[in-house]
Image (cartoon, rainbow, N blue to C red; front, top):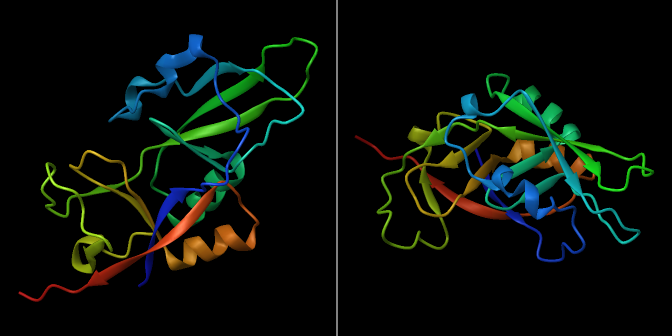
Length: 172
């Protein structure tokens, strides 16, 4: 199966961002068990604000639309919600985003060295997963399968680019 690294689109501008008083929400939790099922946070709304289906920061946040799509491909992934409200009480818009407990796969990369470019992954370890994080490395690298990537593109999702990943089968 073909895979792609899901990266933040460099053309993203004026993206939704949480106010600094909610900075604790940006931490990259290793377990979703410590997060409540639904968290509330606030953002500064403006006419120029652009809302994307995936937001990259110290955590990866998924729009409700993207979360529902991922659930079709990987029903065993657990999610925790974050409801974002504007700071202005007269503003009625709100957004629902999700933290996901993505499966993590250890490809035995040396965590002190840069990953190979292009990225090369052993398909025996992937085990036909449609979305996963590469485990035990310093950078967070989110990988999606071709079918999931195509579904995201067909639904006009925004905020990301897809970088091809090389896969191989390691023989014993």
